Amino acid sequence: MSTRRTSLISGTGFQSFVLLALLMGCANGTTHGLPSTAGGAGGNLGGTHATGGDATPGTGGVVVTATGGAVTTTTGGAVTTGTGGSIGAAGGTATATGGSSTAATGGSTVVDCNPPVTTYCTGTVPPAALISDFSIPTGTTTPVVFGIWGQSIFGGPYTYPGTVPSCETGTVSAYPLTQTVTGGNWNIQGTVGAYSGLGLWWNCKTGTAAAPTYTAACTIDASAYTGISFTISGSIGPVSSGTGTVGLAMQVPTPSTLAPKYDSAGNPKNCGTCTATTCGSSIAVPVTATATTVTFTWAQLGVTTPDAIAGISFTFTDPFSLNGGYATSPFTATPYPVNITIDDLQFTP
Image 1 (cartoon, helix red, strand yellow):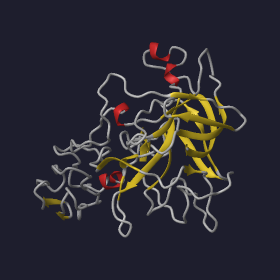
Image 2: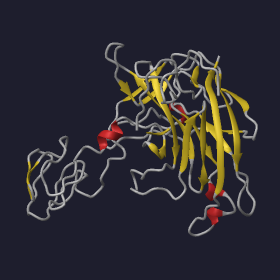
Image 3: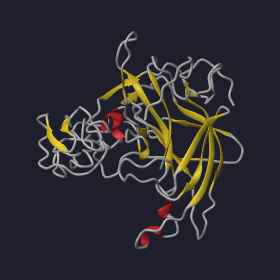
């Protein structure tokens, strides 16, 4: 547990957003990226009612009778029978007796996993070098992880796969990772049996000090620093059978090393500009039972534009790459246990 000091985590308040994946993707580890505040709104485009009634406003309109009826907005269309039909709205679910709609042409997807977001690609300067010492401020029970509301940046940690249903599949992974922030440490553990990792999500302030507003798709201007350091300890592996090396790798993408993604409205979802076959790079992170301080320079991390940091994330070795897993049909994973602890994550001066 670290000695607390003035930093990104100074202050008393903390708000977390739904995420991720540090790399601007769905929250809670369904993709590795930054969670978006729009992720919550994505589930409010239609609403659900057991026998009709109100559909959530937005693009779903209002169902005016208990067993179907007409949708009043121009993007809704009409329910043609009391026990079926379809609503051509952009999102949400209809009623138990009124059909369903979630896409512009119908369908049955409940949540927009890639909702429209505002992208802010001009780097935001962090208030201090220390990102987090994962401690709990005096007088509170909530750990502050990455800044607070009102500062230029605030956010938190994520892992994937998570312990809640994926927004894409609606199911929970058979190999979820769990995380805890307690005792001044960030601990991640579980069994890696699918593509798995962890990272930080954040939001950047775009409004005024008196009325702060934030956007989740944004970059950090860390050009005043030389790289990133942290302490880490724990265990990864061993592989349960055959041969293979397991480990942890770190990625710090910038727009030029990040493939562009688009939201469901066709707008840029992140700041990525890389169109090469392979975008970005990673560096191996040593993990031992004894806590060790690891420092990487921007050059080691492949960062040429530290004024636009688009993500800070870690990935475990792909279990399907072990023991010839990709040579089988279907592909076969070799699961392995992980238990690591990270502390004192900061930009190095």
